[in-house]
Length: 257
Image 1: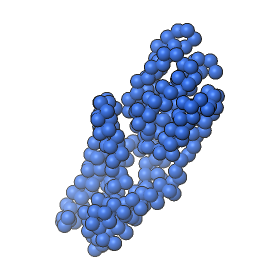
Image 2: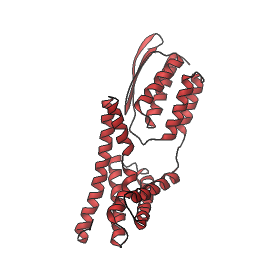
Image 3: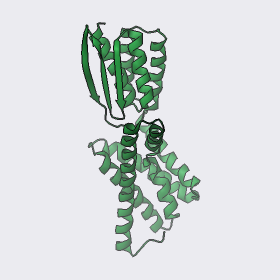
Image 4: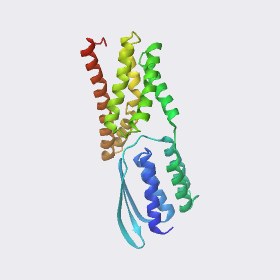
């Protein structure tokens, strides 16, 4: 590979790590280590939560900058782990640039967790969180079913019709709240416990944790981006739940929470 191709490869490695949900410092270490291992000169990396800025000397000239926008996406730990392993082997000099490029393209092409596993995980998570917050068996069963329908709704409707993240979270939280209100109206379970468990698959806990970690590392730009994303998701959940409870109360004369 010539220097320009090496430059593009380093950028591809960083983009794959960041778009898979890898942390800022991991992305910087991966790109810096790859640049040193492949002999790319004067490589400088600046990474934020949704973008990469890379500059280096290419073909004797200062290649001013390459900017790549990385939209915030759900974390895919299988890809992050694969990229971490690839990073260690690159730093250890075990891979040529051609081999590294082939492997990162294979990682990008991997499909990850299938829809069946995601659906079952959503249902199990909803039921278990309902139990942790004091739900009884019937509450957990309703939360399990709500979590199951939540995942089917997101995968089968929101993803299929490319519903934006804000509207997807509002509709999803409204759906599970409606299911729980219906179950409560039929005399099944405790409404608050069922709703709490059902909406937990939507809660942005990982994004909030990463935001706090970024702030503690003095990476305020990345932390602010992640924190804003987490607060926006939390607000959408509140809007969806609150809207359904308000409408249900006015139509049917109130709900005993």
